[in-house]
Image (cartoon, rainbow, N blue to C red; front, side):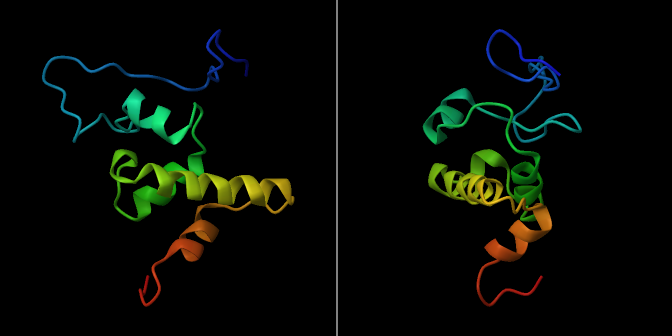
Length: 103
């Protein structure tokens, strides 16, 4: 897979809203994303799939998570990859489960 002229993986598919679409109900397989929000998080596509899956398990849309929280999760992933200990969504869920919660 290559990159587009904008540095986005060719495997990333974007869907623009049409009349009648609402942000709270994106099409299956898509999530709502606002450019300004991602710029505040200093994130560029492609977003790690584990991050999207993690917040899905917590019942959170990406735009419901604070920029600092999103940065924290991405930093955990980066550190794990740098140390050759790749984490999957199950690992992240256990690490980030609030203390005293039962899954």
